[in-house]
Image (cartoon, helix red, strand yellow):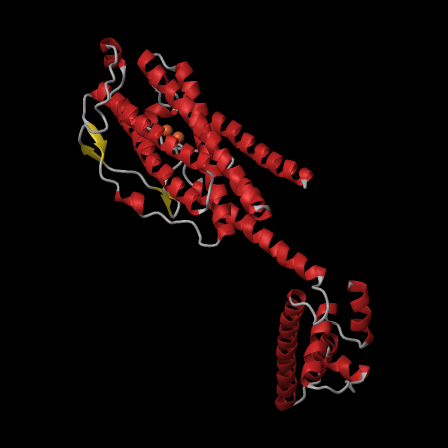
Length: 404
Ligand SMILES: [Fe+2]
Ligand SMILES: [Fe+2]
């Protein structure tokens, strides 16, 4: 198709693309129903090479005349001509570019759509979806979060604390001698963990709403609700454990921000892509990292009650990560290639390292015996989880492409 058009385009000495030539031909035919009487020579001087030739000619003439020390009005006229020609070239080139784009996306009358136009539109769409995926992934990984979270403009939303025992009354007994050995500051870090678990309850409620809005199957909605119940249990464990360490009765305060998070885009394809990337980052990656870290902490813990709590939470987080993958896979099946490009964009935007804010005393790993991770453990498990997520996304897409 390109070769056929290129003969037409170059026959008249025009420099613009075949599609532009075709578009220009159709426009002129629509306005005047008579054959063009323009000669190839006349068309050359209105073509971009012709205008460029004039520009260089005038520029050279200006240099020569300037060197000859001629009066100012002559130099002024030549310089003005140069500038006007320059503007004309820019204007014509801009118009021709717009005509070319229009011709690419609009098929000629009674002719099939140009393949190259479709390819261009498709390429732009894929690029846009990859950009969306990368943006969502970037915003969701600015700060590490334990599992699925609510965010506004990249900021993880967490509740404040208040004096109340509603979330800390779960019986949690530490052996007296061990309780005395745990640094009191460890309790505050367990409460920080508890705040993220509490916010995860709302995040899974949000997931349920998103899944229902998109018509997801009951298995995914059921899993989201079960995961929310798990997060309630994790919140209670974290706050009860903190109380067992320092004796303070604190609980999450009212959390109105839970209702003020952005909803999915109205367009179904965009919504599926956004939900797929959200689930890839918060579900598969963040829940996966949490499961890995907490499982390692369970091995390093020196307090049997804390070990038991860590084992329970690690098993749940591992299941939440698997549910995250199930959502990703469903979105991919529903959204097709657009979702795949969003996922590919997301894994390209994943940071190579992850840092969460830890108390200085915990950063070196000294609190891992009390169930609070250090920087090195976090970095190691993040690397493994990141590699796993990237490999699995490629695998998902590869399997689908081979089956297609
Ligand atoms: Fe959790
Ligand atoms: Fe979780």
